[in-house]
Amino acid sequence: MKLQLSNIGLNIEPSLTLDISSKAKSMKDKGIDVINFSVGEPDFNTPENIKSRGIKAIQENLTRYTASSGVVELKKAICNKLKEDNNLDYNTENIIVSNGAKHSIYNALMAILNPGDEVIIGVPYWVSYPEIVKLTGAIPVLIETSEENKFKFTIDDLNRVKTSNTKMIILNSPNNPTGCVYTKDELINIGEWAVKNNIFILSDEIYEKLTYDNIEHVSIASINQDIRNLTITINGMSKAYAMTGWRIGYAAAHKDIIKVMAGIQSHSTSNPCSISQYASIEALIGDQEKLIEMNKQFIERRDYMVNAINNIDGLSCKKPEGAFYVMVNFSKLLNKNILGETINSSLDFSNILLDKAKVAVVPGIAFGNDNYIRLSYATSLDNIKEGINRIENIIKG
Image (tube, rainbow, N blue to C red):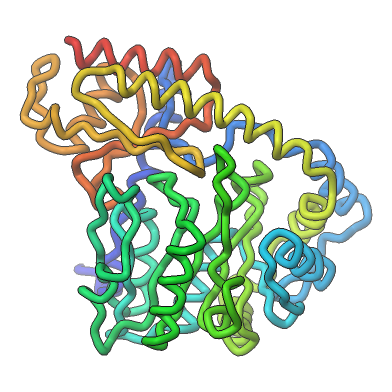
């Protein structure tokens, strides 16, 4: 019997990042000494004050259904955060809380896109953007960016790919996987272009708190009211507060967009975890000192990783301005033979590193660019030193 399955579902590519991370964890479970540079989550524990609030929520029996779009107390805390940190003035009717930022993105795209609409995405991209677009029946339109321009797309790039079907652009700053951060002037230009062409902006700002070297994060929706009306700002608790497993994300947008998103969520997942919502209130309004400490360690790790990579023949990278990833250019090694294996692609190189060096990285093809691999520095400095040393030894043969 041949099963007749969804064409859209069959057209979705599995997440290479999750696949590689899962493989690395499986190897570790078997006692294999693997250095995992594929992880997309902080290695820090959730701060104690946040964990305590979650425990208190359980003790207070706050364990029942909430409003499907989130509790009012958390929405108010999000509004205060957006006002203080991002100069964004929203009411609770402009906020929806979801099961992680990825879920917020899914809801937003489902609320706005129709089959045949086109969504502009810069390459390298986070692996889920094109796949979520395809789930809606819309079409991802990819812009190739250059390392020389810090992997950012320009107005010329946007004009080159825009058609009458263009409905949205996806902006991710700070960026996964490149770590680039768009400047205020760049965001002004992109926002004005979107308004001129009546195109929505999905602004994924999940790495907002992770910027370095006095680089300023700017929310594109804060530039003016016209841009804000077309922008869906996505954020969440996972990266900044080391709360990946708590699964809380949120979106801020025009109330008409939020209303449709809430309707979709009410018929798919209903409310996010009640316990996680109350813990998230504490994260937003409580002591922020742990964020500063984490950032200091990320800077130290980043600087070591970048310097070490650039001292390995055949590898190079730019210093990321945010997030916790480094895109490593290995194009000089293409078609080279390492320990009997020929490197024809980023997947080849990643497999060699995992099999021979026991180092897990993500092949750049997962992000749309086959000349790179992505390394995460969301792991200890000792692990980074050992992992980079293993990579260098493998390349040297």
